[in-house]
Amino acid sequence: MRPPDNLQNLTRKIFKVTGKIQSSHPELYFLLNETPLFMSINQEDITVQDLKQYLSSIRMQLVTFEKEKIKK
Image: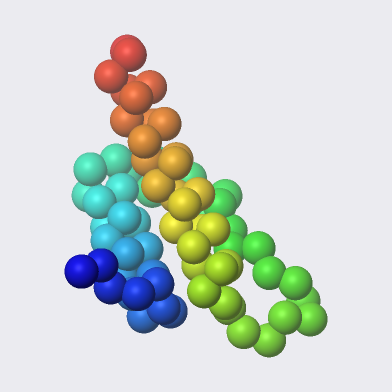
């Protein structure tokens, strides 16, 4: 059974992906600073949806980076 997408589980998944990027692709890890978690100034809390979007974004960057690296 898949764990629910709550803040704790999503944060764990984000750390797992960023850890993989950091250890396997440090050059991509450096670029993650250019992938901010966009939030409104008026927004008080990070939502589950915000974390889902960020996780999706860094996963796509990793997949794209790995595909490009294979091509070279």
